[in-house]
Length: 323
Ligand code: UT7
Image (cartoon, rainbow, N blue to C red; front, side, top):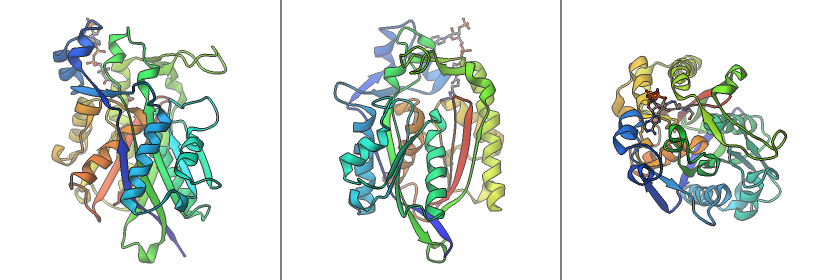
C-alpha cells in the first residue's frame, strides 16, 4: 500500500511565567514601543525552576496524545526538535519516551534550530511512509531563555520558551481522505553560521555558549528563503497559493510574516500569528501556532496548510499538509 502520514492530534505547553516587554525594559536598555514596533512581540513565557525542555515537551506530547485519543504505548517513533536539550546526551526524545511510556520504539532529537519542527516532521513523515514506524510523536520544544545573554538587548527581548507536538499516523493513502503530509522541502546553507549561532558548544568551549545573532542580515535572508521554499512545496504538489487555507509560519518577527505574505500574495488573515504572546520559541514556534489555531477552531480537518520556518545554519524548510 502507499502510505500517507496524517496528523491525528496536536498539543502544546507553555511555562507558567509570562514576562512582558515592560519587565524586560526594567532590566536592559529597551522599551515596549521598540519591541512591539520592530518585532510585534508583547510578552513571552519563560521557564522557571523545574520547567525544562523535556517537561514542556512531555506536557505537549500528552496533550497531543489526548487529542488523538491515544496512550503513549501506541507511539513507536519520537522525533524531537530542540536546540536546548536537557542534557548534551541522551536525546531529550528518550526522556519524553520514558515519561509517556513509549519505551522500545525509536526516539531521537533533530538539531535544525528554528527550522527544527519542519525538519522533524519531514523526517518522521519519510520514516512512516517507508514503513519504519506506524505512529509518531513529532515535537518541537525549547527553553531558549537558558541560551540567552540577558545583557544583550538585541537578542534577549526576542525569544521565549514552550513546546508543541503532533501525533502523526501512517494510513493507507486510499483511505486517508486526501489528508496527510503532501510535500516537504528542506534546505541548509552552512555559509551563514556567523550570522546566527552560539558562541560555545560541548566540543569547543565545553559550555553551551550564548545565542548570537546579526538580526538585520538574518531578516533579509529569512524573507527570501521562506518565500522560495513556500513556492517549492506548492509546485511539488501541483497547487497554487489560492488553494491554501492557512499558513503556519515560524514566529520570529511579525514584520517577517508580513513581508513574506506580501511577497507571496497571501491574505494576512490566513497567516496564524502567535509571536505577540509567544515571541520566538525556535523549534516550538510552528507546532505552538498550529495547536493554537486548531484549538480555537480556525484550522479544521481537510484544510490545506503550509508550515514553514527558517533558522540558524542557515536552515529553512516547508511542509504542505492536508490537515
Ligand atoms: O528565528 C531565527 C530567525 N531569526 C529571525 O528571523 C530574526 C530576524 N531579525 C529580526 O527580527 C530583526 O532584525 C530584529 C528584531 C532582530 C532587529 O530589528 P531591526 O529593525 O533589524 O533593528 P536593527 O538590528 O537594525 O537595530 C536598529 C537599532 C540599533 O540602533 P542604531 O544602531 O540604529 O542606533 C540597535 O542598537 O535598534 C537598536 N536596538 C534596540 N533598541 C531598543 C537593538 N535591539 C534593541 C532593543 N531595544 N531591544
